[in-house]
Length: 261
Image 1 (cartoon, rainbow, N blue to C red):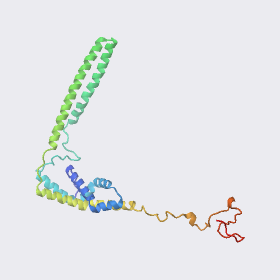
Image 2: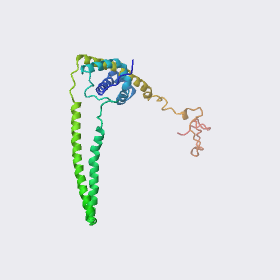
Image 3: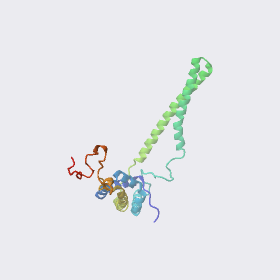
Image 4: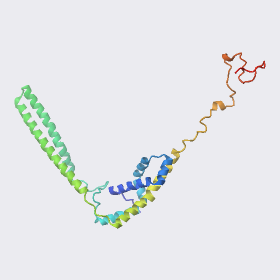
């Protein structure tokens, strides 16, 4: 049958909504209350098992993806970037230019501060005036370079962000009824054959660990020390009870008189 298809960003949002719908169903809510498992933990488990659950509706997803691609003219889905793998996600040299745009103003500012401190320090000390003047001049030049490069970097970053925002918000073509029907069929199969059985299995495995809090309540008030065969009653043979006629069993004394209470 082949390897299951990977979901794009747009389809992952649909998967998250389908997962929330199944968790909110009366059947799952009742099982959550019985098992004591938090709904948030169950949702995290469902999101982590996206490859396992989506494989149950892979045929419907392939049909939906093919119709959607055909409706968009065979292009890559607009606004959806691949999650992994090779591609033209970055232009060659873009990373080097970004690094230079960040490092150049920083290094120039550090150099400017160093030269200015050394130059003005020598001037205040009235030592090596020629060297002090050179250091001050180089310091001010480095400061101008830092300001110019920082301004250029800010403008470049702003233009790049504006371009990416414009590309990412390009309007998608209206979905045809066939694409919508295929999408609903995929979501229905995903809920019934993928997500719901997975959640039921998770709750069934969590049920034994969550049950049994009332076990052992019948023996809560039993005391093995008072139920043993060697127990014969309290022992009143201490010094305070010598000669009182009490034998420890509640029977009359030898003279026939009743023991004092």
